[in-house]
Image (tube, rainbow, N blue to C red; front, side):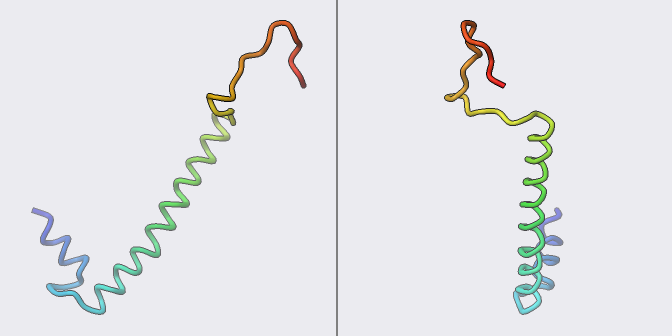
Length: 70
């Protein structure tokens, strides 16, 4: 239902041409860096909110017979 309209919009008409290439180049240059910035922003937000932790294979609980190091 929406496919023909979407393909005409992305191709900028019924056939491929110079406008199609410039449109895909613009989408490529805006969408990919924007998506990367959004993912990095989400990652930094989660690091600030949840804190940094060690990988599961390096985690060890605090030992009861020695004091915690500061």
